[in-house]
Amino acid sequence: MNTLVDEIVSDLIVRAAPVCFGVSGGKDSTAAAISTMRYLDQVGHKGPRLLIHSHLGRVEWQESLPMCERLATHLGLELVVVQRQAGDMMDRWLTRWSRNVDRYVNLSCVKLILPWSTPSMRFCTSELKSAVICRELVHRFPGQTILSVAGIRREESSQRAKAPISKPQPRLSSVSHRTAGFDWHPILDWSLSDVLGFHKDVDFPLHEAYGTYGTSRVSCVFCILGSRNDLAAATGCYDNHAIYCEMVQLEAASTFSFQDAGWLGDVAPHLLDQSTRDALLCAKAAAKRREAAEGRIPKHLLYTKGWPTVMPTQSEAELLADVRLEVASAVGLALKFTKPSEIIGRYQELMDASAGRAA
Ligand code: SF4
Image (cartoon, rainbow, N blue to C red; front, side, top):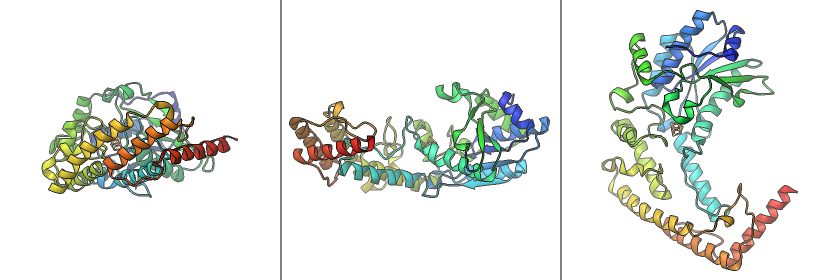
C-alpha cells in the first residue's frame, strides 16, 4: 500500500514542516498515522510530528480516547487532546435547538429549524473537529506551514472519491501567527481490506466498535451519516445508552428525527423508558402536522440568508398566522407574531433592518 504524496507535500517534508495526524481511534486514522510515520522516517523528515484528537464529549465512544493513547505509545508521539470550549457535540445540538426555537418564536425564521446537523450542513465536523484542531495547531506552530494528515479514503463516499492528495486548509492560515497549512490524504487509494490487513501486519488492535459491536465506522457513536446498521450496532454497547436516550429525548422535544431516513428512537426503543417512548410517538404525529402546515408556505415568503425579501399581502399574512398557530400547537411553543397584522409589522421591521444593513 502506498503513501500518497504530491509535489506540495514532498516539498514541505523536505522543509521539515510539522506533520500532525488527526486521529479518532478508528481504523482509517490509525492506518494513516502508522503508515505515514513510516514513510516520513524513510524519506528523512526532520520536522515535528504529533497526534491530535478532538474529543466530542458524551457522543464519543468511550474506547476512542484510550485507543488514541495506545496509538501515541505505539508511535512514540505526543497525543494532543482538544475539545470545543463551549460544550460538546450534544450541547451544540441542544443549544442550537433552543436558539432555533427563539428564532421561530420571534419570526426571525419562517419555518422551524431542526437541532441536528445534516449531510449538507455538517457544522458538527467543521466546528467540533477541524476548527478546534486547526486552532490548536496554529498556536503550536507559529510561523510555519503545517501538514494536517487525515485518513480519508476514496471508496468511502462519492465526495471523498474526488478528494485530492493535498489541499490548502484555510483554517490553518493565520495572519497573526504567520501560519499556513495543507490537509494531506496519504491513504486515499486504500481499500477497506488494505486498512484491515495493515492493522494485522503491524499488530495494532482495532477499536472495539468494529469487532465487539459490529459498526463500520468510529467517530460519533450516533452519526448523522451513520447507516441504520451502525446506529443499531452502537446501541449494543452499554456505555452508549445514556447518550442514546438523551438524543431521542431531543428528537421527541423538537419533533425532528435525527436523520432524514428515520428516527433514532426507532433503532432501540427497548432502551427507552415509557415516557420517552410515548413522547416520541407524539413527536412523530406532531412532525406530520408541522410539515403539512409549513408545506403551505409559498417560497417567496421564506427568508434569504435570514432576511425577508418581500412583504406578505394580507391574505399571505393570514396564511402565515394559520401556519404559525398550527406549528405552535403541534410542537408546544408559545409564539409571538401570530396575528396577520403583527406578522406584516415584523416583516416590515426586518425589511427595514435589512435595507439599513445593506446601506
Ligand atoms: S461523526 Fe457524524 S455526527 Fe459526528 S461530527 Fe462527524 S459527521 Fe457529524
